[in-house]
Length: 315
Length: 297
Image (tube, rainbow over all chains, first blue to last red; front, side, top):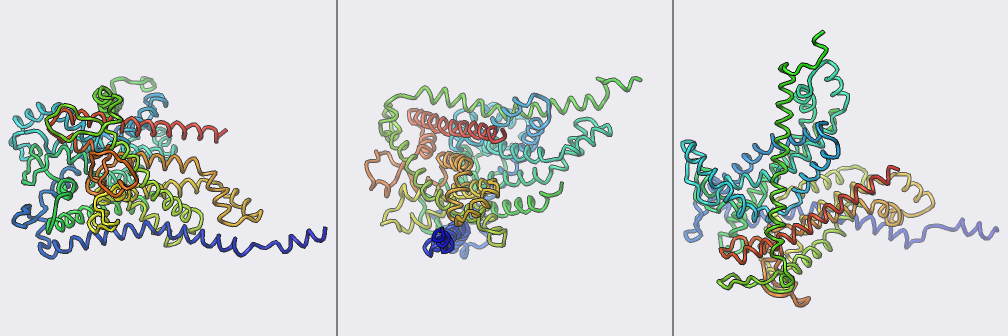
């Protein structure tokens, strides 16, 4: 008996076990810092690779749209404009659609089972690879919308946005396929933030006699606004970086045009198209364009996170 | 007296109906693309499915009518996604363990969590550009340029944030009592994590990781100038260091070909890709719903 007790008394953790514990912790620490290393690596690598082009063209690169590998003249204005216009316009269409859908599946218009089915349908849409969406856009969407585009041009041709004859792939199709891609993001984040609004607020509003939609517009939506805004910004970041579907349907032309019915370009589609066979200073210019894209999406993403942190604990 | 009853024609009730209809229209517009897309892929792609599809090499585009099969691309996708998982899962789970179990909410862990979110928002093509600059153009992998290995690395960058996030969140859901109990009977920290917390969070972590893998399998942008594409069978280990095809890149390349045979092959590849991704998604969703129910009982 006493021997046993003595055994327990001396039962200290072995040195080797202590060391394993320390090693385990430090390994986890190192692995978690990989994220920071990769992020930093991406920024530094892209920046240094674009340095040559940056020093040669400076900020002029951002506002000229000459892209001529033969004459060694590069400017990414068309691509930057294309990135911004496609992402903003697609978001403009997505926001009402996505928030409307989110409202429908958080209110009790239809039984819960149906709402859950609708919700998971929309989320499944997010799982479809963008290259498949691109394939679908080429062979189904483009023929489907062709007559509509001709109509659009005939009747609204005086608007600069519709001023060119529609010929096959164009920026408007890219905007439409982006809407399909962004809808699940905006819908699911809007749904989550609408669900987080406390029931008290809704009941109080009903109690003083507000109708359902008065409650939604004046109480629920304002309370969920920060979450929805953050979701919208995340979607914006996704739209700017989206590559495959857009590359396949936008037409890939560096000729600048205000019209959405003419082929366009985005930074990511430029990268997808030219990176493989570029050499010399073209590579550096492509890295410069990639750097611009990265900064744009980083700014949007960081702003979105800041928004979430700042407003998330309001209720 | 009258005001006690529901008035059909009062402006507020009409307004309510209008908005309800509008939101219903939103739902219909949101769901239509998915229905169209899935039916189209099932019909157009499903019609192409033959046994030869899985065994043959794709023929280079040209005027011969037969496009061949997608065997190298199918195997390539499996290999590249496996490489990405081999890199991203240990790093991601390890990082998640640190964030959830060791960090005390200090500056470092907040910075890492922030970094995870930022990395998740980095456009996928940037990951490709990064690996191109780091590995492809420097020929650092034994002198090989475009390779399946480089493609897997690019994909792992995209998988990493989601693996860390699901590990971190899964571990945070494990009740603290379990940790106290384990530490209380004298287990060391790493035994507690490996034997107690990690197993009890296993299912939620596994679901998240599997969804991350499914997402990575469909990624194209990081592969088009890291793994490139290949028409030939993958025969051995050495092929890792050469160009490697994948379903996603096959769809991209062949969708843009002017030949009908290649386009049909792209539809067939989409059928297989979408079917496997959707079934993984639906399966893990059902699994998650089932486990949630059993937990509440």
